[in-house]
Image (tube, rainbow over all chains, first blue to last red; front, top):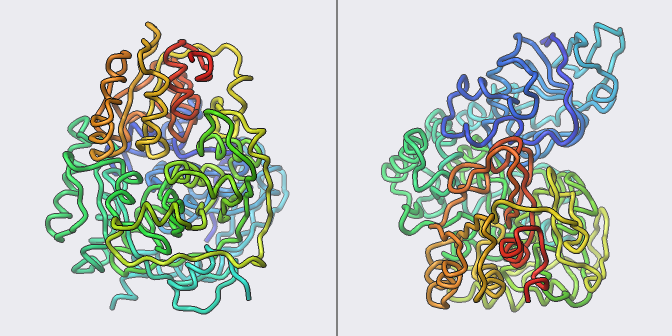
Length: 163
Length: 420
């Protein structure tokens, strides 16, 4: 599967309060959450993104709270995947569980500029910068995580296990 | 092969003799936790799984504490989803508003967590219970839904980092200051994916409440869990309180650590973490003049009786600054009653502080103490991210309860020694 879109560049330690402020956690409706995604952290960002848009961030993306509302908001806002130098651990699990593709790539996190067009091969983790022609690698997900993805998320995986 | 305490607890819950860092395991869980923000999402996912019942009626804890007492219609609807689920599934450990508390103060107090346990919760500060020598960690709602159905969860065995504190605490220094100091040294991802093990003579003499504060903030260094080796201080807390049998695990002397940090405790002063990351900590004596509008004392980090006693010691017979709004939140109803019996609540109110029923409200900018643009708050909570306590143009400074109390009196960030 290829994910293709414009890069929105973010800094280091983007926390879950920045991704979706707690004042909006009185709902778990994906569309309502998407309407406020990143609004405090990056007021210049649009409300909602073009389908396919990609977040490219520094280290420790998604640090802070365990709120699954954060990856839900990003996904529902139209973002196709997140590339970061590193991810905070709860966000990492949550993203896999709800089906938001994420890629750890220090090279891409360093090199990609805001507005670059990217194409990500979700199966191999190869990231192409269509603007500059550069290619970056990302660490593949552990085999067990790939099983969860193949099952269509954790819930399907667990359902199958219960049967 | 020698193992750390974290590895031993994980091995025991995976039915294994041995585990090594990096391994993926399926582990049995002793308790699964959700709150009024995260449980509704978990319940939605649980219903999708198609499980008729939760794995164990006594091992699921549901605590409405974030936006409760319900702050508005939407939060009332969220709470209702959790309440209805608890009634339908006959969940034993559901805590209604009159007997609730902030989850990470409440569950240990109620004896629902013990040494050697493996606990997961849909709240990042679930790592608090490491103070009892348990393995506990935060996860998202979908993971919690899976664990509610199966009673087990997949985990990657973390490497451990050992933090050794030797020496005596200076006056007014608490567990909160030690953890703020560590995060200042290693950064907000300094222990990413790792277990933080707190040891040394300082920790051996640290109160259980101080240990809770330290383990609570392990996640602010990116850690999977924080843990303190259980000892007689642990035993005196859990004895007669724990509802299940418990077990003390200890790290082997030759266990492997990714890193070992050593600190001379006698050199550490009370800390304050400046906006907008917990790693921006420095000594209170080096804070300079920072005027404040609000002082919040409480939360899952510092809402326990020892915290309230420290604040009351500073506020006793004093009046707060006319420009400061102090808000004090006992962590649970039991702690509230204890504070009443000791006269602490009267001390707070006479000093000019507002005292609230237990809630996470202000810590996450939910309700009960939201900041306006440009306002500053000193808080005994755990996060000072942009907009954490309200308007994105507001600021949060993190400290221990005595510092927050002294700051309320002087109207600026101050050490308790300045009001003695």
